[in-house]
View 1 (cartoon, rainbow, N blue to C red):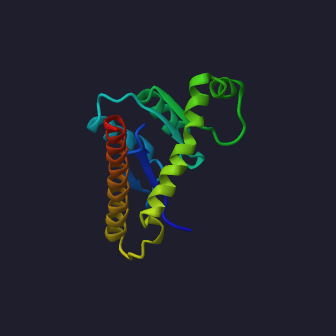
View 2 (cartoon, rainbow, N blue to C red):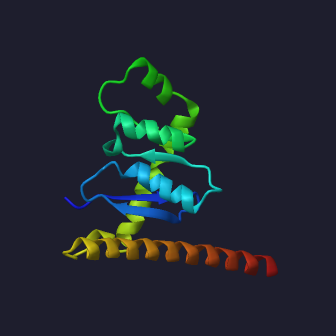
View 3 (tube, rainbow, N blue to C red):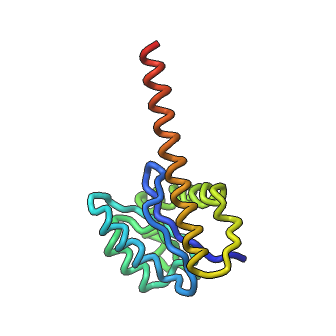
Length: 154
């Protein structure tokens, strides 16, 4: 089993932030604060894996985000069932497949075979994977724009 990595991706599939979860899985709040400080104009709706859940984390994220797509561990009481049946929550959770797609994209940028021993080297390799994924996405956008321009010119 590898070291868990958390990523924040925007609607255009650019990775805005990332973090390596060495020991603390409560990184979600700190990551969202950092990303919101860098991109204050964005409105955030986020989906999280079950491993990020704790009542305190979800409460803090509810104050930071418009919609927090974080499922509760264990038994769901009536209030939690009602929250999870809200359309905004369902939309956030539907978008969770994009998170898995992002992680798959990073794995294709060689994040899945990091052979670095030290924590610093591993974090650097993850950052380089994120950079590679963002450059690849930028190239795809530029190519699509070029194809559209050529199509219009023809």
